[in-house]
Length: 552
Image 1 (spheres, rainbow, N blue to C red):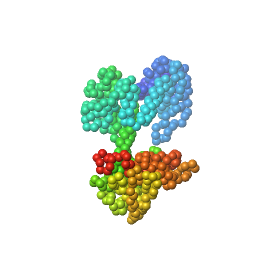
Image 2 (image 1 turned 45 degrees about the vertical axis):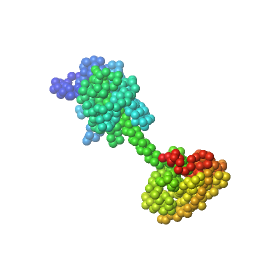
Image 3 (image 1 turned 90 degrees about the horizontal axis):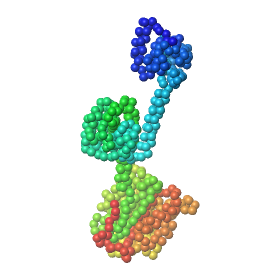
């Protein structure tokens, strides 16, 4: 039975109980010896009786836990509040209950009673929310596509957080890009010209400011464009920013139908957690998209050009990077048509020390420098000297080798003036299958203060070709034992079988043989360029309109 204290002490205790009446759980105030001093109405409802109920009979486990509490030393230190005690568990009126104690200085204690079923339900709801966040993260991280991330965010928000959701991307002028979705539906993309300030908190959310509480937003003031197709009216609105990497990735607008009330504070907190995951994924997708666009633009500038027919002469080129995942590397080639009719076309094939992106960057600088030096292309020695000075003044410590070929068509023959700077000498494929090496040679570019070069001039009859190649071809290791070099002799024999073949066919043949020799092993960058005199039975003479130009 509950004991009844004196009027003065009861008045104090009632005042104390009134202060605790707003607690979310039932509570009992037990005297040091275990008698009930006071209990809240929710506690007596849980016990199944009024103040006359015998707690010792209804919950003996609670009385035992309370008596044990008297003999336990206080937790914490004198400078701070006591630490929480472990809860007691038992059955009360046929229901599983957890009792959490709050000891008092006079030996009494307040016991907070928590329905075990409610607690398990709350834990299940909380677990489901975290599973939703984990599921959302998995869906969003499976794609770096911006539009797909926005659609996934809208669809999952409509399915789990509200009746409908609208995801709005950061504004570009007065144009809003948005994705809408209703529960059970599919995302719909769209854009319109509208002022985000018409929705309270939306303009601020798009700039990354904290959200406006749902209860402050009048759903009747929402503009018509915010209402998704399939939803007839709006009963509640919640606006949450999508935080990104330094800048907002957009805003998430949650919508409820009429009669459901505003979003509760805990729902808004969970919406912010949801938006944080979504915003991080959308921001990552945006960054990837922007970087991919920049990379693709730069890559197009670094990739070797596609070569065709220029001023009556056939050109063909082929390139393979050292790694399958790389598109560019240290080998390069270019063809610069003559500025004036009847002038010389400058063809260049080079090899920068190293491989991969770092070598490709220097390759791009060399190609740009050579383009600027085109007015001096008739003087190979001077052009190489100026290029050498330019490379010596850069922060790069890499050097390069290259071959310059000034090409001019005369009647049915092609004259090629060659200058090799530390590079393998070009090979000449005659119409009868003979293969000759050019006599040009010279020093590296970008390594020594001065450059030296000895040029050579060859003449190509119809059907003959001049083959420029990088050392990635001859130094390719593989073969039957796996460590043999492809070598110049093997290249000569292969070219001897290519007599009178088109320039493109020669390039494909050389690259195919070198790749087969490596057979999937490690390799250096490979580059081949062929300058060929057209056969007399096929192509128009030099200077005829439609002869073609080098493709960019």
